[in-house]
Amino acid sequence: MSNLFLLLVSLIFIVISSNLFCNALEHLGERLGISEGVTGSILAAVGTALPETIIPILAILSSHSGKANNEIGVGAILGAPLMLSTLSVFVMALSIIPKRGLNGIIKPEHIGIRRDLGFFFIGYGLAFIAIFLQHFSFSHLINVLIAIILIVSYLIYLMFTIRASAGLILEGHGTHADSKLAIQFLGFRYGKISISLQLIVALMMLIYFAGIFIDGVNNVATLYNLSPFILSLIIIPIATEMPEKINSIIWLRHGRDTLAIGNITGAMVFQGTLLPVIGILFTDWSLNSRLSLLSIFLTLCATMWIFIHVIRKDIRVWHFLVNGLLYVVNLGICAYFFYR
Image 1 (tube, one colour):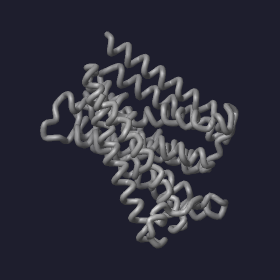
Image 2 (spheres, helix red, strand yellow; image 1 turned 30 degrees about the vertical axis):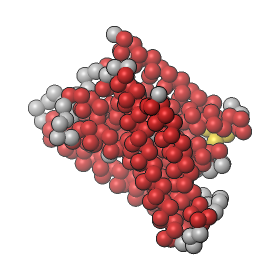
Image 3 (cartoon, rainbow, N blue to C red; image 1 turned 180 degrees about the vertical axis):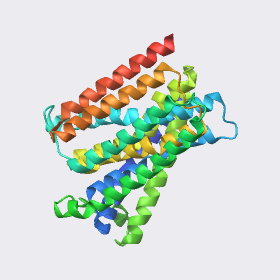
């Protein structure tokens, strides 16, 4: 009962923190004069990706790191993009069905989203290729080269995204705040200091309560004796991806489609390029388990499905429901391996 209460309370505060974070981020983007693409794909994506980024790093680099910690770290690295490309967009679609309908149109700024997914394919694809190169005598050198390429590719992605900002603003995709800065209701004057204060406090709250939520999920999972890999592939990403899901739901329900989708795809780029660097350099990245390979395959399928409709400039609500079906397939596969 105490674990369930902990989950409920932390979830409530995650929602509150996400609202404060979104509100401050909109004002920051407007104040800086940047596009919704930069705000969603970089600022929001990196900020809300901190919980799921910290977990695999701590698990893998821990001084007590062993097989279980490596499984948790690798599973979290694989599970984060899988969760974003399947369950996250599925939940987002469910949240707007009453307003837009199954055939409703989702209208993000397509060029930026296409760039996000393209860089994700490059990073995640290289990480996937690295799996099959671990048995060669020169695998260590290959791992270092791939890690460097992944880091450089993310820096190039940042450069392209920021460079495109000015043109997007002229096309009407600048970041605009729809409501008053929340901290002003407490008597603070509007300005850079108050925006920064609210942003920092909201982000700290997000990380803190996400940590509490993760602890609660881990305790519940322990009661059912789940394996470390399945725990990190399914349970932990659900908990750690909570900020992205709630932020994107809030923005999508308010008609801020570029911010909502960019928050998801930007986080995918961050987690598909930088996080695998930790796994490739500090774990046995051979991943002989068929479950891990199937998870990567489902992630690529889900991402390709989104990418196809982004290229067509025709994203419908029901398209994201298909991604939810892929998540159900993943659950079925994990259940099969677990019961075996």
